[in-house]
Image (cartoon, rainbow, N blue to C red; front, side, top):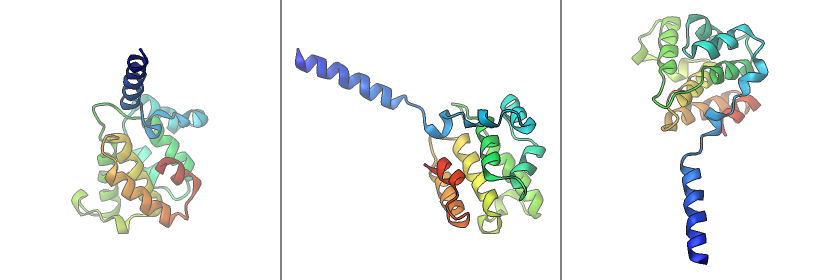
Length: 151
């Protein structure tokens, strides 16, 4: 009886672990910023547009607002392509093709935005996005917004 009970508890524990969502994608912290129009728009549309890309690249927008915008764009089990759209914007901004974008030429907050967008686009494979977020942490002096997304 004890073995059966243990087996049942073990199966439910493993199953819930396997199907648990990532805090990176399942924590809707954008709601704290839901009065901001661009964040409302990101939540409704779910797809990055030019205005949102400019917002993410703006030096006058704080990191927490950028993180909230990306969080509002959300994720999809089948993946998204917001990081690719952002790369196209960065290519236009820096006058290079998407394949020629060099992370070393990007501003630290752009590296952060790209890393977080990549994680939201495909959270089943976050290796590249974590590498970008690590670079952003170094360049942004371990700011809380970057650390919260990275963790």
